[in-house]
Length: 410
Image (cartoon, rainbow, N blue to C red; front, side, top):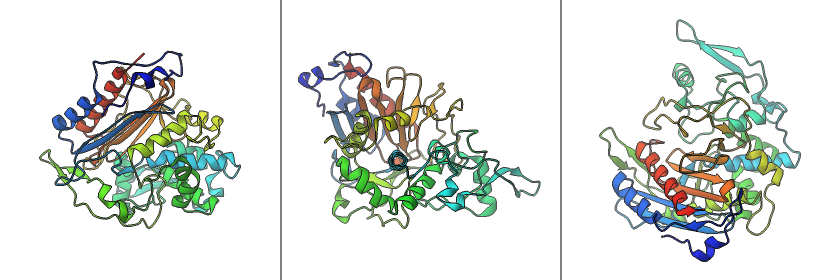
């Protein structure tokens, strides 16, 4: 339900212009979300909006399972690639400490990242043509998706390579050592670079990602429900996952206690809640500080994580090779967005939505977030079904974002 009050709003300040935010009585986020899931056939969602210091809105609609009780704000979701920003935060902490470099060859930390090969198509018999990479992969490339490591879900060449070589990656596995699809630093393509970043964090820190995250990020931020290892005690808070079938209906997967992972994947695999992820985003808005004032990241590091790190290269539309997992992805149609360390960044404002310079990403089961430093605002909406960027999920995200900015009227 809506949690904005005139007293709260009176103290909020825009980052770019010192004007108080006011509540527009014309928009009701509860109606947008509750009506949206009914109209769009979405089983359940949670959503939150916050400034750096205050939660402004919390909503939870639908059922945790098809036959179960109603969803709650602290319902737990599989957040998939929303893990990536946390892995990037871990790596940047180690950069701050001088234990990692953004620019040296990543093979200094993981020798297997030396002597990589680039795929140059296929011969007449369908055999992959591989040639040694001319440039070494660095941590900078891995964290910006410019390494050449890609996902087969959105890359036809790697999907063909996997089929030709039997190199298919099991769901949830940490990325295998595939060829690069292009020379490092020359293109942007969403992929497994942050899987490898996670392996580097483990190697350099001497900790598993679960241990590192809990000690240095999740614990200090009070993210008590965020973990790779799902506890039995919280099973009654885990939401069901659904898949869209060929007839257009969403069908529920049988819900079961998740098995502990055999490996920790920096590219995905965390369980979390909307309130927990808001705490992480608020840390970014506070330039690296927790609510209690602990410096998780230095302000200069947050500035780097908020700035274009891919130069003249642009983030582009991603064409799906597996419609059951993802539709074609175009996060900001018509715009030339950029990528930072950990986030998608839009140099141009969304019409009726987030400001220019906002930071965002998502998880493959349709969890989405954005951080708007200019408006001192962050928001998250969590759904749980495949395929990624399903038309109804994207429509719900759009309606939510439009309602948030209509509600917060300068």
